[in-house]
Image (cartoon, rainbow, N blue to C red; front, side, top):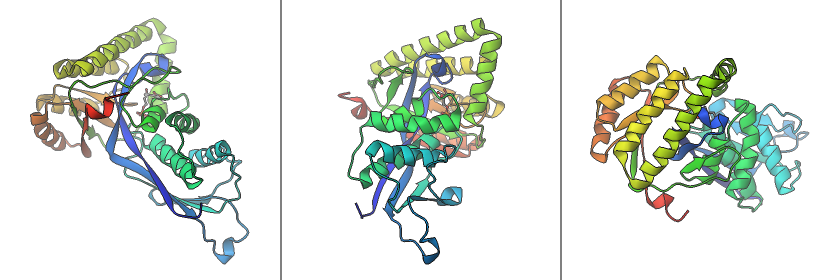
Length: 325
Ligand code: PMV
């Protein structure tokens, strides 16, 4: 219990179904292992001035913050994740731990930064006390922190990151893992713009309240696209996967969660030979995702850089990681 332990968690990207997933429709998301959050825990060595303090201390250099965990603070997701994990393990708060949090996942860009930090935190605390928690336990604990970040999260981020597997997700239903018939080469490109997810989720909710019939019809269309995409991915039909991405992007535009910058990157990817492209996540900023044949990936990456992307990530959803689930 007195050694140094660490745990990590990947980023994620939503391939299909964002926003409609909040209203009970399915969505597809995959881990993005090229970026990660990492948490390291060691016994704290307090200075003389700190001897009166007790309990876990969190050091987050990327956020420029160091603080002692106050179990009464229910507004800080890092504290909530720490407190609920210790409670879940049946461990008291008296342990003097130094918890160091680092992440290469850009914040507020739809790559799951908040959920990944919490997943790594839950895993590291459990590991420190000799427990390897199940993905569903991690996911449930992290969902509580997602509520603080996002208000009414569907739960897709904590689920895909805790399971570390491609998922077909429907709110409050058992998670399913989908199978890829052929490796899926993805290119993810960042607009460099941060837009809080709760803002676009709130705007969609306001629109849905104003005109439920139109929004429900759009959500249904997105749900059908997601189901068709699941089949196309399983069959390795990348032309169809790309076409469905384009269809999904058109519906997200109608929900008014895209932006000129997102559309610009989507068109750049398509123009460079991607099979299809769409915005991903909450929208108005953050990332787009494109699917490309392996030989076209380099050209798509170059085009997205030329189009001004702040960051470009290549990732592959392999057959191997979806087999046997
Ligand atoms: O966290 P983001 O930006 O990837 O967005 C999550 C996806 C939404 O469907 C917009 C919200 C949700 O809770 O599912």
